[in-house]
Amino acid sequence: MNFIEKTLAENLAERFPNQTEFFPKTVIGVARDLGIKDSEAYKFVTSQPKVRRGLYNLEAAVVPFREAIVNKQEEKTLSSSVQSVTNDEVFVPDADPCYVPWGNSKDIESIIRSGIFYPTYVTGLSGNGKTFMVEQSCARLGREYVRVQVTPETDEDDLIGGFRLINGETVFSKGPVIKAMEAGAILLIDEIDRGSNKIMCLQGVLEGKPVLIKKTGQVVKPKEGFNIIATANTKGKGSEDGRFVAATIIDEAFLERFTITVEQPYPSVAIEKKTFEDGGIEDIVSTRRLTHIVQSFSIFNDKMKAIQLCVNRFDEDTKEAFLDLYTKVDETTNNNTSVEDQLTDEDLDKVYEDALNRAKSNINN
Image (cartoon, rainbow, N blue to C red):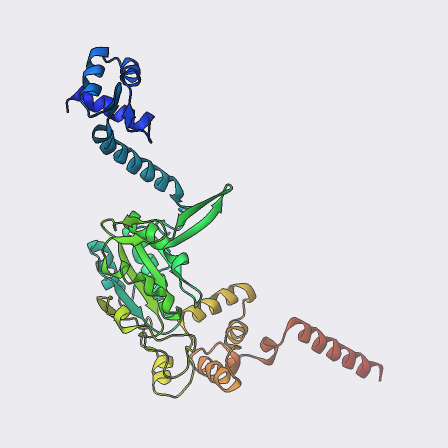
């Protein structure tokens, strides 16, 4: 089939999507619109099988082009119906000037810098900066990342995507996982041990291979640089001591998809942590809680009050143990301060008022 015949066949397939039998005058009319000579069009149509006098079957010529047109239309429909409601999830986080790298931060930065697909599982006690470490590593390296917060209700619709009503139309909105894959970003799955078996939809994603979006039939290939880092308080085996009761047991096949497991410690091996690990105390003041104490101090300008407010969530024995420990390491606190320093302004006013009244009474007497 030469160029002219291909042009005629393609245009006939597009203009007459459900027709295979044509009269010469119809084909000639199309040819004139395309600037093709009548004789060339007549030669083309009469070279096809004849159905009856003046009617020819052009099925063999137009069907291949018709299939290509249908595929092109489907791709166009897919691209318009598979979209993102927002791309705000993908961004380079801001660098925190107060961030101090510690623990496994150097290894995490090396993994992210490599650009290699290297699923990493980071485990450690609550509040020791696992998530912040990954975020700041991305900030320091200028890498885009997407954070997904996992809960027992997190499912495929939340992660991969689902249909949404946008401007009166039902369209498929890509989820954060797909957006991270397409952007070549770091996918941070936070608190992965809080999820149910619904997170098993990430099995294929954790293999670093193209993923089929079942709801649309689209195949998404991960862009170079895409990687997954998950954080958890446990190693996916549940919480033996009951401290993290919401932590679930993660399927072994799912855990096997992670190349390495990183145990993130606290910033320093402090006396409090050693005491905690030795069983001397049942709770620990995490890095997050220390930050809360500093924030409280900036508001109340009172160290002991800031500490007390932030450890009030513990039972009385634990709270007293923390407060007693702090008074032993900070000489400026209660043990070495006057009674007046421990009283509120309202208490002081009352004390002074009582003292003044007693003085007046003595004078009068």
